Image (cartoon, rainbow, N blue to C red):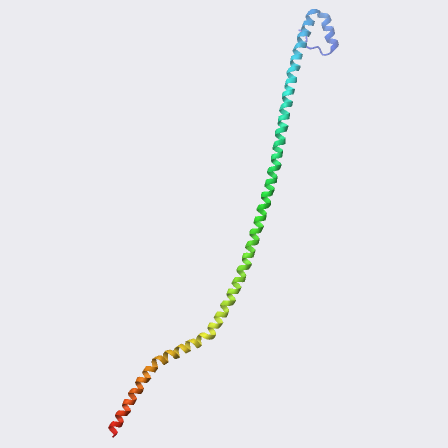
Length: 159
């Protein structure tokens, strides 16, 4: 059986010389077949090139979208960090303000307690004296009236 493709051009020339017309037809058929394969390979190459170009366009679009997304992410991350810093600063300021208010409250409370300790006993003593005067006043008046009657009665008996 003959080799369908001779390894070298010299081998192809000697094969064509020895077989004559049938080898020419064979070579012609082989050449037609090779041209068809070449055309199919060229079409495959063109399709692969188109696909590569499409993939390049898609890759560039995805890459651009990635950069946009990364920029958005970086911006959002910065905003989140800024918000967190503001929150921490606000909490710190609130704690300072609450501490100041607590200090002022404690100072006012101490002043109130000092004033209460200073004036409360006097107020209680004054209140006790007022209550005693209010109760003793009518009692003393009644007692004086009774003493007056008793003295008048004693004078009347003595006379």
